[in-house]
Length: 123
Image 1 (tube, rainbow, N blue to C red):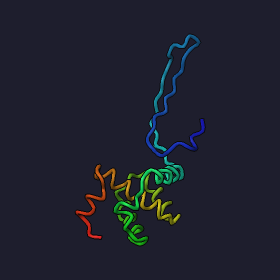
Image 2: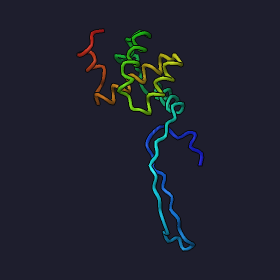
Image 3: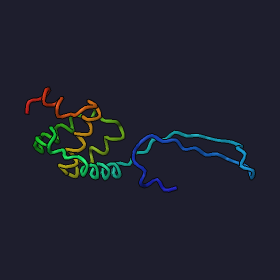
Image 4: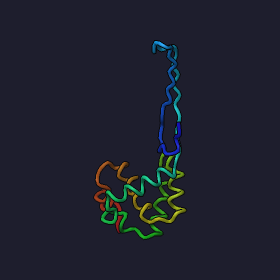
């Protein structure tokens, strides 16, 4: 089974051994973690079509502020996202940088980030 397009995440591999009558003889489950930053980066780019981040707080950040912000949150991102953030920074895609930063704070705050950020940071 090709897992080349499987996104980053935690997975379970389950192998069942059955006889000819389909009776279970044995089973084994193995947990594994997949890191696939290239697929994650593609998914992030596709998500740009659904959200206009330019209307959010990240839309007001300069390229330098975006890079600084992404580097600043790097110790806080999930381990499987660290490589993705590195790729986003190397590719120099401002849209992907804005989207990742927006997504990060959206998940952390669980509400509209622009409202919280306006109350916290002065632009």
